[in-house]
Amino acid sequence: MDGFALLSQHACFGGWQQFWQHASRETGTSMRFGLYRPPGPVRGLLVYLAGLTCTEETFAIKAGAQRRAAELGLAVLSPDTSPRGTDIAGQAEAWDFGVGAGFYLDATQAPWATNWRMESYLMRELLPAVQAELQGVPGVPGLPVGLMGHSMGGHGALTLALRHPGRFASVSALAPICAPARCPWGRKAFAGYLGPDESTWAAHDASALMASQAQAPYPRGIRIDQGLADQFLAEQLHPEAFEVACAAVGQPLTLVRHADADHGYYFIASVIDAHLAHHAQALG
Image (cartoon, rainbow, N blue to C red; front, side, top):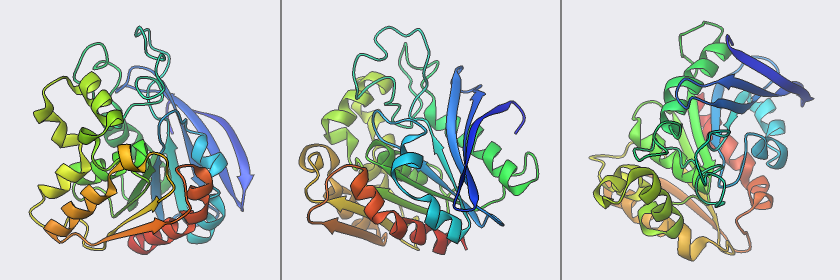
């Protein structure tokens, strides 16, 4: 990939877990991402969006996805969760806003609007470059792509899938923030990145976006796994709001509730094979 520097790679289940760095035109910063390349032909690309405080390494190290990805022929792309290294005052003062908390949107408010452009970074820059690299034809994105994420990244997966119809063949989420306009994490991020006009927030709220659909956007179904022992479930996540919105537009939804599971990566590692299978079926 021209302009991309390979920082490290590690043999893993016959393939390679790689970590890359490049100068982003969208964020104006240096950005890092992880990429698992399976052995043999690549059948599809799965993008994983991580949650608050995470980096490009978190999923690769903790989720245990490479074994099943290798068997299914899936490449797995794990971007960082925000720009880093800017001179914005207070960017790292809170764990749920700023660094590590990009919310996968393009900020419109100063001082964030210049660099905090995670939606454009993913959709217009990183994803096309990685698709072209894996397909082997520079500049021609062709591989089918699935999208999944956890917590803030689950919010990102659901909203980007709905905001970019036809771009993704499959979508799933783990303990996602389903109605960010109604929860403290989301309201803090939206007020800071998008401004006080709450009428603009619905365009980045998965439940509101789903409710606005004329028909089911993913007829093959969306999968969500949610732990009932998740400490953030009641206040922050609101999967029931997304469930209601899906039912209203006829969107097939598999919402699996796990009695003893919490919000962390032990839970993710326990259900990751089911998510990879969900995406592999859609990706062919």
